[in-house]
Length: 154
Image 1: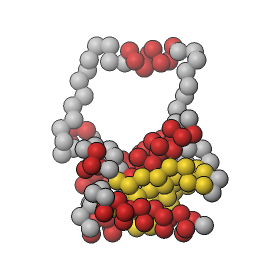
Image 2: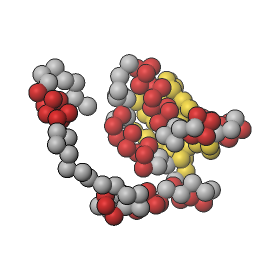
Image 3: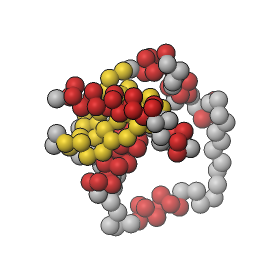
């Protein structure tokens, strides 16, 4: 069954290339039924975050009316990149299955190794300059959240 859903993700990725998108496809399955699917829409949408996994997660969450994918499985044509990996952990699906690894993606020109290399660096040592400014009141949003009695944790 997992291979069948994964084949559909790969087919979606192929179709997406024909439709002007990137060579990636993802779908979300709950109770053995596809509830969301998408190809990579970065260039058509002019959105660097519109990776197939992110798009499928967004659609599935809207469909479920929840910000978590409890009891869902994500199938992707390729190993999720660092951004998608973060989104997957926040969405909390039951499992993820993928058809190609990041090294196959790199061989095709989609190399995320520079991002993996940046993650352990201190912010000020990263290739894109990141600066912490000690701003008065910067923690006020967190303080307001802490005082909130009826907050919905995520």
